[in-house]
Image (tube, rainbow, N blue to C red):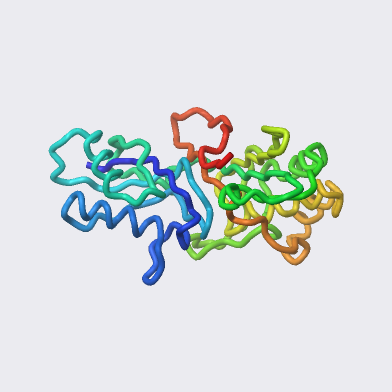
Length: 263
């Protein structure tokens, strides 16, 4: 039987999702926990790979479960008792034998959180990007509108080796900034798929617009020019969170407060 799980993690202490030989990763910890609980090596499939320091509340994984004679609720309890404190299985359910979290996904939704304060807040350093000056949300949304639809996002990221055709064309379904508190802004972006570093480079470009360093129309020019050199740097990984992966038959995800926020 194949099962599908929704997993949340604080990415601060991981060298990304994907298993690595000499680094602590989310995949490595989950597969270690599965082996301890089930007594056998159990590889997992995932909807995608998050980078070092990136969080998730809605990562989707799947694995084949053999010989488990108990309710799945007991497996959730056993895994969460075995996993480290910075990873949790939030839900677990049966799925089709050929279900693949990545290839069956219709879209992924990320949220990026910024907090604005004259002085940095140590308790928020792992979950939000600190800015001294508040960027203009109206200008950032004007710029974000140019991202909607299908474009070549070569200026904002690169394809990973898992994409056989190395295409940099992606379809963005939603891109919106919201002021969720007097000192907090959140960017929600949904797309069929993302390039490596795409969201963090998009956020950096939009914040530059919000701070008056660029014009909203410059984002359109970046897209059309396909020149990654025009966007200097990345938004820090700490503010980024994978919140939802959508599959056929499911409704669209509504943005929600980041569950990993430290107030």
